[in-house]
Length: 171
Image (cartoon, rainbow, N blue to C red; front, side, top):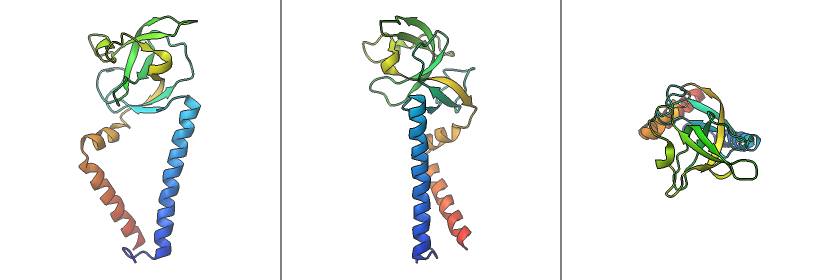
């Protein structure tokens, strides 16, 4: 017995946990397909878009429309960097037969994003760089993600508390 659990109870707990994880994964992948975005939900990590969005806001993305307009808030990924950036489109070039090219800027920033783009890149290409356009948000819900990434020890504490709760629930 492990922590007072019979082998059958332990197996049931493990299967339930696996079911929760696989359900979450399927929901994420289904949302990715529906929105045509590899990351349909993102968390705002900086104050560069204040006052429109605050650090910790959870954003919902849609990537089905290819006709991005000036003023639209988009999330893009820079080649060679892992963290997506949430900024507003301030200029657009091309469209129609030409690939749509976009220049972005954070509402709270003084300059446009050309310094953030990959070396030699002066604009974003809609089809390759944009993850999606912001269609909705929930304030501060994503702050938990920020806390867990900035303070790794919190993950251990939370996992420990969850383990204690499981053991207490069984008694």
